[in-house]
Amino acid sequence: MKKLSRILVLMSVALILVYFLPTPSEAEIYDKVLRLHVLASSDSEEDQALKLKVRDGILEFSETIKTPKDVEEAEKTYSALLERIKETAQEIVDAEGFDYTVSVSLGYEFYPTRQYEDVCLPAGEYLSLRVMIGEAEGANWWCVLYPPLCVSAASGEEALIDAGFTPEQMKIITDSGDTRYKIKFKILEGAKSLWNRMFG
Image 1 (cartoon, rainbow, N blue to C red):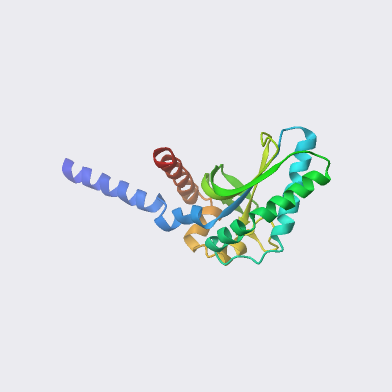
Image 2: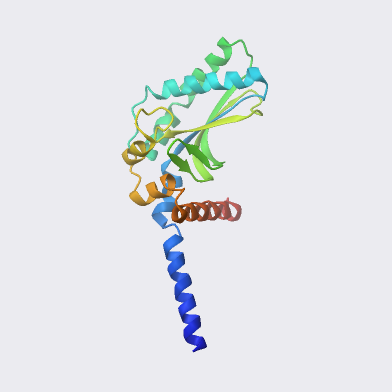
């Protein structure tokens, strides 16, 4: 009888895990996004205002680029445009009367959980276009270049669908207020954090 009880408990636990654990497809959320990260030189009012002007210039420039069909194309596109993006940012800094140097890079970095209107992306490591102004020690600004959540006139969900997000992935990042998906969301974050500590 005790053996049967243990089996039933184990089966119940297994069913709960199957219900709540993110699938491999849902974990691919991290691999479908290109983030934008702009860092101010300092937290002074002037440097923070400059950061936002640089941000606006980069987003305006990005609107002239044909929307990539997937994140791989987005990576290639922005990688080829790094020098032009740097020039765009530097011109704004110079025009505002600052002597800061701007540096731009494309690589992977850790992002905290962020809400973008109706979309919430889990904390974790993402492909990132990083724009550093001067000392880059001030408060920073995050957004999403691909899917174009920063500049798209479409809703977040429409942009994600256009980028090829599956229904399962959509539920993770748009229904994270629902108990089931909130748990999946947190498990996904925890698993990504553990993976980064072990292999990052």
